[in-house]
Each structure stands twice: as structure tokens, then as C-alpha cells.
Length: 231
Image (cartoon, rainbow, N blue to C red):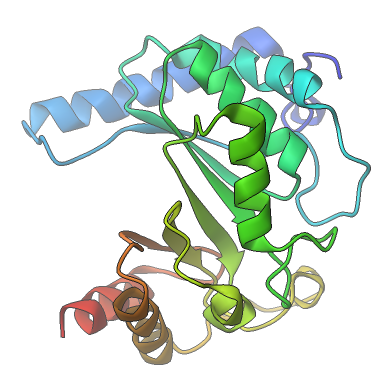
């Protein structure tokens, strides 16, 4: 795998330009945090996989993924970030490579897997098995793991209280990724029902301490999640 940014290059972004934009964005967020003198706000580099997270693609090697993700992580490792959030990863090998790249620069990283409606990665690996595999490949170097871009009904049945799974960033819609991809209108689901479902999961699995919204969600959903969890 070469070092060209596979998601940004088609939009005209070179490696250098992308790195510069990443540094400027992080500087803005760090300045806003510091101006308000907030000590409870973390600034993170959010990054995704090198390829389509919803396509069945052959795996890349851990070494190739490590080299690829090191470029973006290395560009901002000393820019004041608190952690890397690696969202919507769907392959164990690439997730492991991203974890090792962050480790190389001494930056904590949280890995979030995307699952299909059966609670598995698109190659059939279960969510918790994927976590264990990444930990085995990296000596447990990730700070923690999450699941994102899925509705609670897609993954709640596979949760067992895995101690390394700390967060859920949920879709508002119950539709599959294929259905969402072909939709002509945004499906924002039911904010109140989503809040209740998320709160139920947090109460059942208290290790889930990071909660957020993904596709189709907005502040209505976030408010309902917060209110239901606090209730």
C-alpha cells in the first residue's frame, strides 16, 4: 500500500496539503479548548480506514496498514492531540496497523469497528472476536474499543460485557448499510426510542462509558440519550 491518501487524493489533496489541514484543524480545536480553560475536553484526531468501510475487500497486511496510518498520525502527533479516534474500521489487520502506528508516536488510540445487522464485521468476524484479535496483534496497545455506524438492534445481541469495549456511537436508523446507501431521504429514526435503547445498554453493560451518535443523528438524539441515561 502506498502512502497516498486514498480517500482524500481523489478530491485533490496531496499528503502535504492534507497534513497541513489536519494541523490547522487541530490547532483550532486546541485553541478553543484552551481559551475556555476546559480540562474535561479531549481533542482527537478522527481517522477512518484507507478504503471503503462498507465493501467486502481483501485484507491488507498489518505492516502496510501501520505504514499508511503513520503518515496522518505522525503529522499531528505533536500538535496537542489527546488521542486518535479510529472510526468505522472493518478489518482486524488494518485496525491493528493503525494501533501500532499510534503506538509508534506515543499517542493513545481508540478503535471503533463497524458491524452489519448481524453484529459481525462484513467478513463474518464477530465484534468481540475482532477486539481480541487486534489486542493479540498489538499486545493490547489500544486504549479501548468501540462500535459505531450501527443501530443498537444490530449489535446489542452480541454484547457480553467485554471489558475492552468502552463505547457505542450509534446510527439513528435501523436500516442496513446497503439500505442507507440507496436511500433518497435521510432516515433519522426515533430519537426518544434510540435514547431508551442506548440507556438500556449502558445500564446492562456499565463498562460502556463513551456514547455518541452516528449516521442520521443530531442533537435531538444526543439529548435523548443523555436524558435517558441520567433518568
